[in-house]
Image 1 (cartoon, rainbow, N blue to C red):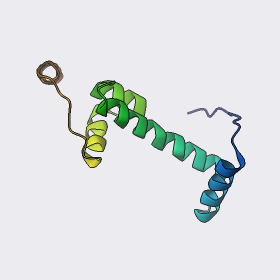
Image 2: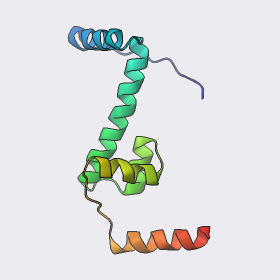
Image 3: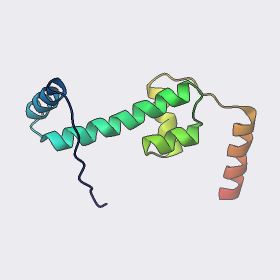
Image 4: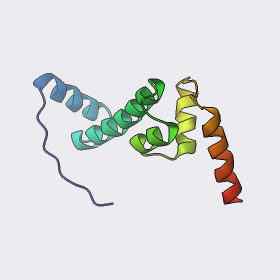
Length: 99
């Protein structure tokens, strides 16, 4: 996958935090920023799902993972599933089509 270069502005405290974190883990600051963005995507997806602002499918897209993986992430974070009866029926229909 092609990488894009992004320039961001942050305050000194945030930059020091990133620098120390990167140094402690023997990585460069850019890698830590990418890891934090990935983690932020997952946390945003969890929060949106918990607030019923996103379906499981949309939460998975936000997090950049499959629906199955998102279900596992929600379970790991003790988030109760917000599945409606229609969601269940849609899932069954998808399984029938796959088989």
